[in-house]
Amino acid sequence: MSTDTPRRNIAVAVTGASGAIYAARTIAALLEQGCDVDAVVTDFGRRLLRDELGEDAAVDRLDAFLAARYGEGVARGRLFLHSNKDLGARLASGSQGCEAMVVVPCSMKTMAAIAHGLSRSLVERAADVMLKERRPLVVVPRETPLSLPQLRNMVALAEAGAIVLPAMPAFYQQPRTIDDLAAFVAGKILSVLGFTHTLFPAWKDTR
Image (cartoon, rainbow, N blue to C red; front, side, top):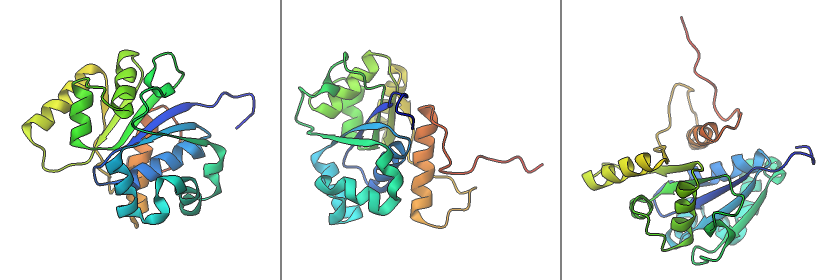
């Protein structure tokens, strides 16, 4: 990235739904793009990272974990960590320059809170800022089956302007590893944020 090119600033929230690998691959992909990534990890999100990716993925070691797993490309960006309890953080204000936010994975509790504008934590408040400022908010729910209240919350989010992007990896690219599946979801997230990437091959017409 040229030093003359402003870094894109994207917020990423990690909550307690299963799917820590989606969060890790998305953060790594944004760092590979040279972004400034403001990350907020909830208490259950912290447990999720450790339970699903191991102790090396603990929040205070996340930089090193991402570099070890995804390579030196993550050094192109900068990762900033925020406490979910810090409602005075820059992400809580509409005057800050964060251009978009991704909640990955998004628990049903967090999804409900965002859909109803509760703003009790930094994750909820930062998401509310994205909606009120008409900036992209990508919510990546990971739950199945879905109840009627959960479906209604997804509709409420879509009506408010959020992009609901369920963690549904495809298989046309013939994935061979779990990382391939995670890369597909991360690629979908980057695509809706306007990034060009090679995380998965584009669909080819076979006619």
